[in-house]
Image 1 (cartoon, rainbow, N blue to C red):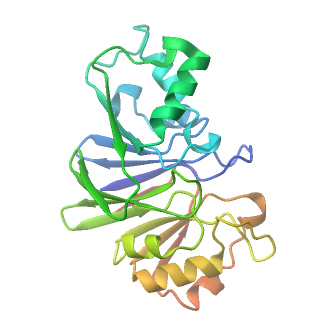
Image 2 (image 1 turned 180 degrees about the horizontal axis):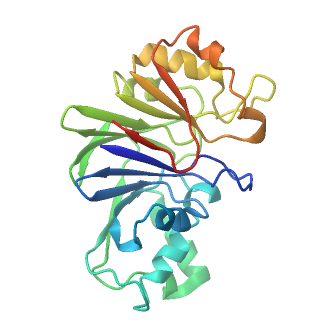
Length: 252
């Protein structure tokens, strides 16, 4: 299982960090976790084509996590340089139906893939809901951010990856991440600036230690949270700590 960080940033626009997006790949099955603005170009930068994306998971509907789904769906309407022949699976909270209808009110059928090319999977907001995404056994659980916010756990053979999405400190994430090989976790707060429903290094230290994860990737950085006080995390968590950068690859 391979993880590529396509975007380690937030809604704060900067050249160094794209808005959120992560690609998880197993045997040519490519699962995209979140779809912020600029992720389509990041996919091309790593040598992938749009038709290589097998499935998409959206953690919540804030613009920095979802807006490139609009040009992606728009592109399915054309045969000029891009033609999808197999359906793509979209995995989202049940609230997406209302959200998508609002998008179609604005953009009409221009963002509605041709018939047979979209498999929409609406996920209930219950703890550790289990299902399959291609080769992955997946689990989702609600987390403390937006009403629709979900974190996801992916398991393949004997390896596991957990993606927090955006969240504040919550027991649900700790349970989902238990003994994961890799936890990709947001780090939008610093010691100086703390916004509710996001995480700081101290929160991450407790979550990682209690969940007994092996490695963590800190991501979703604002300018004020980029200089992570790693020693604060190391006081509790003894595993490997990786600070995300755009386009880095991590083997799991």
